[in-house]
Structure formats: C-alpha cells, structure tokens
Image (cartoon, rainbow, N blue to C red; front, side, top):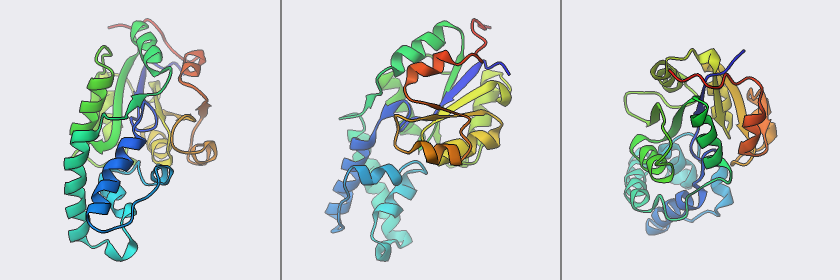
Amino acid sequence: MRYRGVIFDLDGTLADTLADIASSMNRVLLKNGYPAHSVPDYKYMIGRGLENLVTSSLPAENRSPSVIHSCLDALLEDYRRNCLVNTRLYEGIEDLLARLQKEGVKMGVFSNKADELTRTIVHSLLPRIKFEMILGARPDQPGKPDPEGAIRISQKMGIKPENIVFIGDSDVDMIMAVKAGMLAVGALWGFRTGRELRDNGASMLLKNPGQLLEFDGWEFNTRS
C-alpha cells in the first residue's frame, strides 16, 4: 500500500496543549466551588471533546446537565483567551510537516476540540504549513471515534482512505482510523500509552515525529 496523505490529531499529537486545558478547566472548577485536578490527571480526561472533559472533571454528584452546560460555557470563554499561553508544538513536528509538504504529501487535521479553537491553534502554531482541511468538533458532525470527519477530509484531499495515514495519541484516534479504513499510527510522545494505542488498533508506534519519515510506504512527490 502506498500512502499519499496524512491526517493528524491535534492535542497530544501536533501540540502539547495539556497545561492550557488544565489551567482553564481548573479555573472554572475552583470558581464554582469544585476541586481542581493535577495536570497529569487531565491526560485521561481529554480526547473526547470539551463536554466530556467538563463531565469527567466534575464530582460525580454534580454532573447534572445544567451544571455541565454552565461549566462548558465558562470553559469555552476562558480557553478562548488562554489556549496559546503554554501550548507548543512537539519537538520535530514542524520539521516533519515541512518535509511532508515539500514532498507533496497532502495533510489535514481532525480533532475533537471545538472547530473554532482547533483552527485558531493550528493557524497560530503552523502558519506556513498548508492543510487541505482543518476540522474540529462541529454540531453537524459526530466526533471521533466516528470516522465521518476523517472521511470528509479524505474527500477534500481527493485521496482514498486506504491511502491515508492517521496519526493520533489516544484510543479514540486509533479506533476512528481503523473504522475509516486508514493506517492507524500511534504517537508515543502524546498523552496515552503504547499499550492503549496497540490495543485499539495501532499498526505502528512512533517514538518521535521524525520516525514517520522512515516509513517506506510514502508515495512522495505526488503534487497535483
């Protein structure tokens, strides 16, 4: 199989967003009288969208729909202002993307983060990289692990799913990639473990971004 496109998850794959997410969520929790969590705790709360993050962070006895929605609105307001305070690209990501771009590999981003925030972070951190499509969570589209968003990106690329690599750092990323018929590749520099990635369908694990260039399945120089 030859691969002509790659879709990246955002949080824990392209960028380390953990500190900013944790800070925003903790401010909302403390303001409402709920206990905060350590930054590492959030590694297992993120990945399934901000509403799930809010629900997971709240005490079990305070997870009523009204509390969840109130805290979600507050989180969105805070995180919009603070999503780029400590967020940084992982080492080697910019070089990897520049090389893929040079070689004509089409690229996209698919995240369970709100669409507006996904676009803001990607455009701010990677202004010189061309993505065929940047897609976050939207009301008209199911989130990962549903493959609909990834299929939309593949259609925009004009590349069949079986010729696309999907790179992510969580179980939902790997499950989604398998459902979409894409090659599921796990990023070990992210928020979850290699075992979790393997158990949920990863065909390959990368210790660092540069290892992706060593993969011999690329069909380079495919500009159209």
